[in-house]
Amino acid sequence: MYAGPVKPAVKEECTGADGEEVGVAKPERPTRKDFPVMDCDGHIMEPGSVWTDYIEPEFRDVARDGLWKEDQPDGGFDVFLNGERRITRPGNSVFFGAVMVPGMDKEKLSRMTMYRDEFPIAEGAYDPAIRLQHMDLMGIDQAMLLPTICGQWYPMIQDPKAALGLARAYNNWLLDYSKTDPTRLFPAGIIPQHDNDDTIAEVRRMAELGFRCVIIRPNIVGGRYPAHPDFDPVWEAIQDTGMLAGIHPFPATAPPDCTGWMIDRISEASGLRKGIVSETLCFAHDAQAFLMMAFHHDLWTKFPTLKLAVLESNASWLPYLLDKADGRVKVWTATRGWEVKATPSQVFTQRSWIGIESDEQTVFETWRRYEDIAVWASDYPHFDAEDAWEAIENMAAWGVPPEVQAKMLGANAYRMYGIEPTLVVTERLPVPEVEVV
Image (cartoon, rainbow, N blue to C red; front, side, top):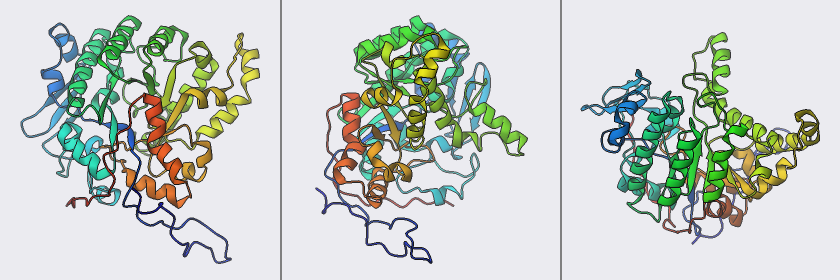
């Protein structure tokens, strides 16, 4: 139960010199909630056992030459992509893809140096029992689990059979991870986008195993983009299973496969190193590019029961994109040589959703446009993760009604995934202090 509705604090020091309002007051710190929270984009960090214990014998050799993670005795690891070493993490030097735990914050994080400071990988990223404890501290009742290593590098595997073998191994491992508490932990599977037959076979296998979500990279994989008509059989298979298609970008890797590569070229021409700017921008740009391509191909008309969500791309850009697309539909029909029947804003809001995070002030300020399509995500344990209590606090600051908070933090997601809500965490618990040297 709430200790009364979460309300913004009385406004103080929220006016400029001329008396005009310049912001919102910081609300009272929320301590209780009476609705379940679904984390739609919580990540795991794949342990080496995915490769040593779960790769099936027929795929072992090709998987080793595709994408392979090797754990080291000192706690570090190496990642190999297509036979080349892509990353080395010595000992307990920090890895920003798995660093954010309850008690860590961005101020502490700013004092750390990647691959130099000692800070262990978040245990909950690979140990489900610890993950449940962290969820309790973060105000999260249930979580859909997504990859890290098998997200960032996976689509760049050159051998389609290596991609298939790793997808089967990863999905089997994550299913076992989730079985620790199947009422709270839910696996989102990866698919080998390189080959339609392999992809469709894995989609159907995942559905038989009880998966609710298929992760699709909005990138060029094996020379093909998922909005291309050649990919339609895959969309049809996902639609037939009733699973959600989760569109999830990752940072730019090799070869050039996403908008991040152009941003990296601009960064280098500006005297900045690759990745600094692209990791800020490419998630949203990749999602925007995918939606526009899909709208052009009338994806929602071709697959009238397909459920689709855009994840980890922020959301404040969506109204602009939908408004712009709506104004272009007739022009698209004339210039494409076929009729674009769907009005983008209508079809998106009927069967699609978009992920939001705890710090999206613009979304909370304009919450009426997101009330039925926003689904919250922590991004645990990646470096920009935040908990549900921060989301409640920021929503309250912008006057988002408690019943709408409940929809954006849980109810929309339960409808999207077809998952039964489970309320576990009702009270904000003390968070252990995290030391950063």
